[in-house]
Amino acid sequence: MARSAERPVSRRRDRNGSDERNAVTRKERWVDRYVPFAPIISHPKLRHIWPGFVVSFVGDGMSAVAVSWLALELAPRQHQGLWVALAVGAYTLPGAAGAVLLGPFMRGRSGAQLVTWNATLRATGLGLVPVAAFFDVLSIGVYAGLLALSSLLQSWGSAGYYTLVAETLPRSRHLSANALISTLSQTGVLIGPVVAGLLIAWTGALWALAVDALTFAVLAVSCRLAVPSAARDPLAKEGEEEKDRASGFRIIARTPALLGVMALTFGFYLLYGPVEVGLPIHVANDLGAPASVLAWHFAAFGAGAICGGLFASHLGRLPHWLILNGSVLGAGLTLLPLGLGAPVAVTVPCFGAVGLLYAPFGATATALIQRTVTGDLLAQVLAARSALLVTSGPAGIGIGGLIVAGWGAGRAILAATLATLGLGVVSAVLSGLRRLRRPAPAPEAAPAPEAEPSGTAR
Image (tube, rainbow, N blue to C red; front, side, top):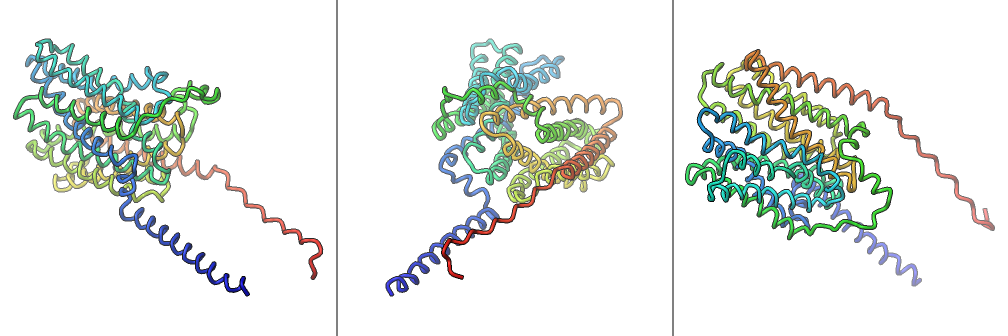
């Protein structure tokens, strides 16, 4: 009787516990669907670092204006184009070289270390520019050297953002976290140039670059205090050390999934170069429109990229290959009206749609890398990816300049658009063939019947 009296109590406890677990599960599902950024922003190890990310992304946006404008202020009028190209190249290309040359030293470092070191170097290099001007030693050589110094760890710093996410958050949160980083970055691209323009008009480009350096100092301090860098394990196993000897590029080359997504990413960003070069010339010469029309196109792109970053966090249940190929094909289709000479009322919304598709592509490609590569190798692969992206942009712009010079802006944009569509079609076909060749999972074996206890009466 005592046992029968206890049973309802235990059932009630089990039912209450089950109800509580179900309530927690329903709450998690609701959060994942409607506010996917909330658990990431409020994470105990990350909540104090997001303000530093925001400030530094604004600094990135300021750099786009302040670096080239200071070169214009320093350069003789007859050599302004050369000086601007030298300054922009010095601020971007050393990051690709650093991804290759500094690989042995950066292996095994945590995401927090990579972000902190890059932010510290950028704050130092950019901050020394006003100091050199104060002592009247700021020549084009000194300026380019300081810019190159500040950008040497750029690829590793970019890898550090996503390595930190992979080290801190569960895999189910990676896509949302990547999308949040992309959204914050695009917001900085929108706000940073405005801030830099106001500072340049008020105090000059030197002070704008000084404030830019300060934003990276804020990131370095916040990251160092909020996420202490993990020390390198001196007792690493020999097998892990052997893996560490392989560079990120070699890991990509011997992993078909990584090689495919890297090739697609490089091609996608490369083919945007002719559009970036051709659009200003198309607006000025073909349309005879003022600079405000060009500004509307880029503002629409930035707004679309922010919306795309917010939207990307809801795509976690879709296959990665579907999002990547769909983004490339969609971008090609939305650029087609621009290449065909459609009116501004059509091309501005279409350019916004291009930005909408670019943001999920980057977040999803990074999530695929985070899912494929783990441990100390992740930072190497992400740094190699960042180096490829650093080179794909200038390469695309260089190719675009040659095509625009030979064919004209409209034909160059149309050629890049058709090539983007072709890239998307080829990638979709290869993805489908790879999935068809993938062996089907073996059926689970039926459980063996349990043996009857001896002495059981029938």
